[in-house]
Image: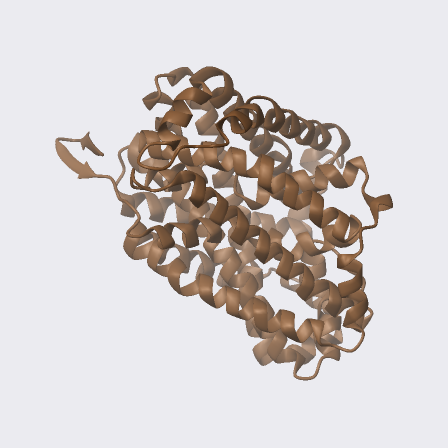
Length: 467
């Protein structure tokens, strides 16, 4: 679709191939949460019981919302804000703006975490013994416990965001798509190698049995909400990403099939990651955990006990690096599309300004973790209550407020304002009939909003995080 901008006609970029779109969208969905959070949550939630519930949530709720986002994107061929206006409801554009803001804030701290991952790739290549000697201390020092963390907060994150910007500057087909076609197969190959090594370790069979055992006693309301949150965060819903990616789709693409492929690939990678992590920690007597502390500090105990553990450490953090890069690229692309189309900036200017500004803001995310001067200032600002760090505040705003609220309002918009019948017309364009249209209508109007509302309330009132 062409649009006028300062007297010139610009053709909207499109994906060069369907497989390129699938890999790019799956790359967006496959982030750090699939690898360092899903396995721990599966362990805490009763193994197979959690996994089954998670698969059902993705299949019926996550897929329903993802299909809606891709449909709105392809229908309008606009960024997330322009999409509401193109559908004839400009008063709803602030919901899209909320998604852009959410993505931008996430980008700020994702750059830093991506930099930490890159730092650990180098660490396991050149100084694994230092990591093994004091895993917690090594991680804390990288965050600034004993002085300004130049490597962890500046150098490695700068390399990470520079790589992201280079890909984005090459555009959709030549940049994001081409990059995804290279790194996503590499991610799968590394994941398979690590999983095969994990499940063949002495004692790993106990971890495998645990994941295949349905312990329903551990499946509480809390774990159900955890599975819901994991599904929504993993599929990149409630931000500016999937509407933007959908807007680059050609009209003849089958949205239902694409949605199924993206959800399947994302879920399979999460499941394989669980069979990579849990058997390994069982075999090495390391307590399964969730998040950065587990991935950066606790897993050192696994690699130290493995023959040629340094090699597997490098492969593991390369796996994380690819997952982080593909996710950051999609997050920043959503914001870039908004800025170029709504503010009429050139793509180059938008990417450079967004990359530099998010990098600078993100530095304070790392500093707030351990760097004492910044921690002290933040404690004075908050008077020492509720939010122990600036980084926690950023995650609170995105994970517990902006993302679930944006997804909830989007479902209300599609289900009750734009109406499912209009979405179904777009879904069925240039493809076979949508046989589950009645089921999807119920899901998008009633089931998904109720589930997302539960996530929102649990996060705000009971402190449960979406991611």
